[in-house]
Amino acid sequence: MAKQKKPSIPPEIKSYIDEVAKKTAAAVSDAYKPLQQPQNAKAAFKNTEARLYALPVLKVKIKDDEEKIEELRTYGTPARSKSITRFSKSSTRMDPEEALEAIIKDKQACIESDQHEVDVLEEALEIIKPDPYYESVSDRYFEGLDNEAIAESLGCDATTVWRNRQRLIKSLSVRLYGTAAID
Image 1 (cartoon, rainbow, N blue to C red):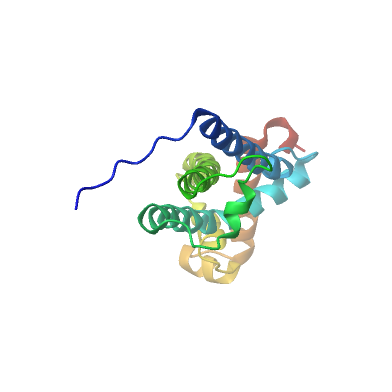
Image 2 (cartoon, rainbow, N blue to C red):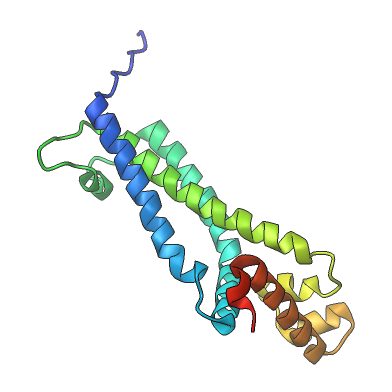
């Protein structure tokens, strides 16, 4: 049995798919704006903490989304996929291959946005890695350890851990938000 050639997507449908992908990327970017533009140093600090807590989850989400794209490429969309209706135009009905391509582009746009956030945070973390109290940040936000457990591993007091983590988070805040993060 010969492998059938995939039919080409009409230009108007392809442009619609690209438009949907751009709008999705813009919507994801807009969703992150409250985290990206704090009004003062306190908000910048809290936003930095929220972003650090989210970092491990975002990494898992990216892997899950990449696996979902591979599943979609291998098996296609489910017969009754709700995500297909999102890509339907009122006057034009997309065939399953066009809908699949739109869903994949949409998922790829989300992955790119999430990966950008991961890259920005990892780049900022690289700057504080040489600090002897870097572990107070990584253990707290990525491992979920409390100050006492971190203090035990660092061989210092829990108050020292807290104080140095605050200092490092303020440094990250300035790196991520600029002058808005300065008291």
